[in-house]
Image (tube, rainbow, N blue to C red; front, side):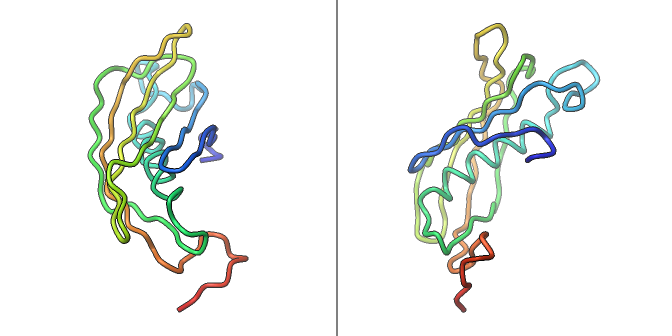
Length: 132
């Protein structure tokens, strides 16, 4: 995410927000944010929303997602907002909406619906002892 300039700008139980400022290197041939970037931040926003409900010693893994791109992502910034649809012990369903901010106005450009798996006792943080 650092390579893309993406930043986690909001996190609360069951919700997250990721933003990416415009950079020409993140665009496709018409100057819109690239669809691969849209999918990446949507997946991460939904994943972080899921992760926000997990224990510190757990981790999250994307099982699958469907992404609908509905409008060109044109603007100064992309904003992905993830939220939980249905939490579960092993499987969580989450959604992320991606907005393109242009001249102070946000346009919904994509929606992701995804399934995320809780990886119990598999921390992302290597300082946490992994239990097996």
